[in-house]
Length: 467
Ligand code: ATP
Ligand code: MN
Image (cartoon, rainbow, N blue to C red; front, top):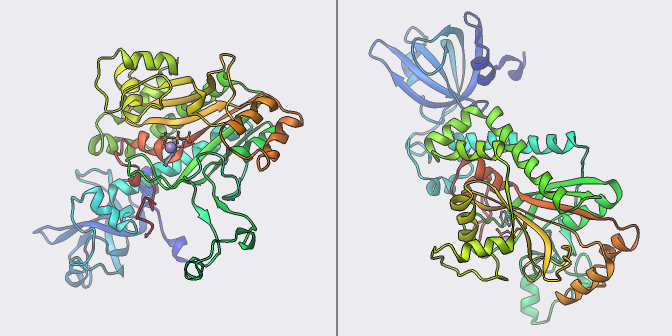
């Protein structure tokens, strides 16, 4: 039998404990304790579940003393034995060990995550090992459940998953935020003292990593109806905040024959679906987040599932903020972008639940958003949630070619390079709408984690691109 044919996952054993039968488990030691009576209790985790399996090693085992002496946090091992009902302890079952083989040693003096209590900051220096801790193991499983549920949600509704490019010549959203991609030898260029010639670069023009798949998503929505993208996105955000990464995953649905109300309805149903999935499929992880990360997290997540989202306009929100009597670090005036402190005050203090703000001033939003009849606002919507602030940004798109063209010009963008995008209005344009959800902000919301760097396996932030 191959290794994998021999092995049983701990999650299966804990779910369906076949008391009295034998089992082989492979994993890593979390803790070891020796009793005076001459047995060792070893907590084993194999990553398949939050909970460990307790292995009881009797001192009658051959080489008992030397084997047990080599077991430390991080040691990998294979154990075979009988599953027996557990006396006390967290689990109903434990493994009465009949054979034990050490697969890989772990020097307790050198193992960087040997200590019981370590700060998230400390663990960020060991992103290659931190998934072995309770918190980061739980986050990895939560991320997986949420990602699968995203595909499930759209698949159930007939949305087609579209793979949009990562390298693009579009530089439409906020210039300056994109990472340029080049094969020009920069050291050589600097030494030559010449200006770069991008016609000689790999693509024959300047290109960058995508900041959003939306524009390409629109092209497919205007062919296929309902589509979504789910992929990595890159923004050279220079601010060191707890909710911005330089590399993050974004989900962007785009619907043809849809308006702003449809967009809000989709966003609300989507967040409800994802929060429900987390509660149903990660109960153990959620309980842990509530106990150890943030006591309010389950209530907030349930609140998303159970209560309707409050919907109001940006203008109404600004009035609330101005008459609030609160002192904010940044003052609020109609026309200014809302800061995270304003967003959080609205969703946490005023409405105590998710809020959808609509109809933002056109000056602070992207060129492709549909201009309203008032001429001052666009059909934009942002979804705000407690603990995070903005989690989703979306809009009904401008479908009138003349208005769109003048918006492109007003914003100083190139009509020529967006000619393909204008084609989507030139030939069979339709009302359409969509939004972008930052996947890590979602994981942050659902887990209650304070810093976005801790909800992605290998975070990329200013000054940090190593492991
Ligand atoms: P913010 O004002 O918070 O920077 P934004 O207005 O730049 O957000 P959008 O361009 O609307 O955001 O992007 C859609 C979504 O992507 C946001 O609602 C957010 O969830 C997420 N997002 C944006 N920038 C980042 C980032 N740097 N890191 C992680 N998620 C992000
Ligand atoms: Mn931003």
